[in-house]
Image 1 (cartoon, each protein chain N blue to C red):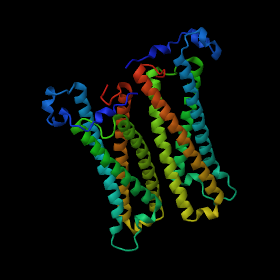
Image 2: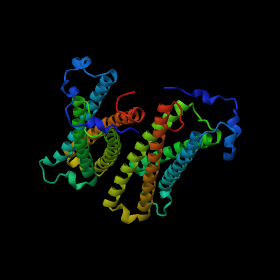
Image 3: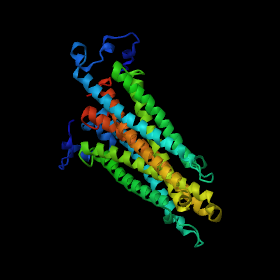
Image 4: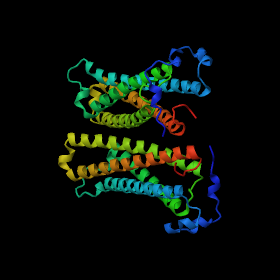
Length: 200
Length: 200
């Protein structure tokens, strides 16, 4: 496997100054480079969607506490809701970092880490965090169903609705992360085949 | 992408009669074929482990009903436990089919479906069923925790212990399915690179 760490040289290269897509023929941009750029835009879009969903899921769950009466249940009383908040916060942070890495790659044409590390880092974390988020979502959903069964929700319906919204947003975040994970898996395959992240 | 469906021709080929591994030098067996065979043994082992775990998980959950007293809770009273039984039964069936496909491939040297279909079928189903099993396991675990909280378990402890065992077996099945999914993902990569399932 070729390790293309050399792409990461800190000295500025001519391509860095090329910000406008119409300048491409002047520089060493090829068809595969333009394809990679479009692919990176798509990755960025899904990362952004995952970030928005998981951040709002965590925020929704956190703000269930602002309900007026003091005897409403609170999210941190329930282990599964703590798990949901933690998982969504982790995924939001990770997506933020990956969005930064995407922007870096689109603007500078090189990856943040050496290429080998980057593609495997992305794919591995996508997989693990997708499983984490699904697990949290399932546990939270089951807890929400139980709360409904033991009539907590008739007493404080706002809490239940807000936590349902948080769970739904968490599942949406999971879907976007899943798509990102497929895309980064595709990048890993490209890397294995070509020895670089450029597309087939 | 080369589609090697031709391997599936129904007419018997000389390799089919070669059942003993020491006969290999006489026929067209190469190093990569022996590697593939060893790889298939490993896949078979993990499929078998996933099958055993998920089948025993489903059976354990189903047999919680045989408890003596009639007022013990039953697994089908709880949505999450029904989900656990269903997911584990599906995975057990799927693993059984995949074990058959593995044995077929080891003994006959060709895949059940055409090669392109087979590698993508395996990988796709592994992914989906791994997510399904994890989701069921998480929901079931949260329900088990809730049952403990509302003191169902002090009344009928055998039920709780048996469902805990079933959940643990389900998670073990998930782990084995996850490993199978990585292995079949590797097969997909090999197929994309080589145009055949033979290893790199």
